[in-house]
Image 1 (cartoon, rainbow, N blue to C red):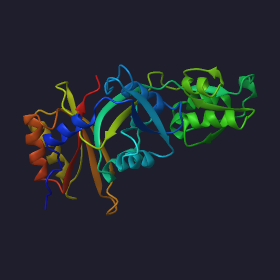
Image 2: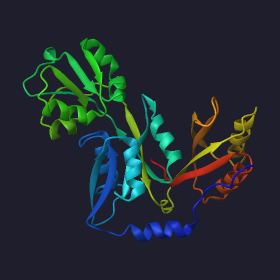
Image 3: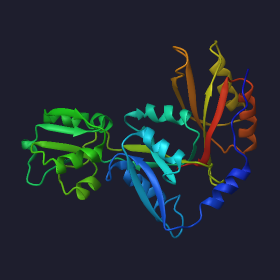
Image 4: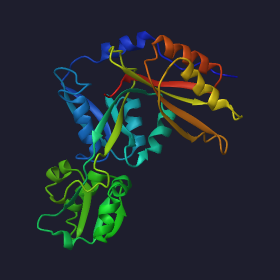
Length: 305
């Protein structure tokens, strides 16, 4: 039997506005070490001039080792918000984050596309011919694969870009370089041997902001994220997507992940234009409620222009 779509009413949005009063500090959880791209994106999005900045406040990015820790910290109230990557323009989707979106009762309250410019960092005084090993997060290594192949060095995956830079500095690793951003070079006092080493120069990571309450509607062009499961029979997904088309709703992204309940069955994550309060979106969500096994609205928020 189809379940009702999980949505929150306007009273929760009013509560969100009431709780976001100006204060001295806004804590934002991110995955990795200070100097990572998540750290930079947190300061950009929640800091002065950012889309989510609260007047009179300063942003404090709080590092966590794993994506799951970020979700847990937001849910437990250890921090005010979280910021996690969902996809990279070169390497694709971050599957772990999609799985965590389904597992936690949090809301997506915004998004930011952050430029990713990878650099090769080392201890001061090293030359590029001295480097025999390069360490970094698997995504950063994959995004810089063409440059690294030409170096002919050993490639070692670690849990974080900035964490790799921190390791080079703290352990005084001679002959070892880290792939990370220029901010990590400044923070950990490392030399930059090469800049913009990513294979595709226009490289961006899309981050989503997490909160315990839905984002208040601003009137700007909006985007909605949902997760749903369809019956395991021919045409189920086709009919669900048709309900969006009937309402002239533009589908922006479709992502599938294993349901983890039965082999070879999947749940689907959809991004589409419009706010859950828009008439056409409401109609489409009502139609989906009757043709899905479950359908949950993860959030409606300002579309990143």
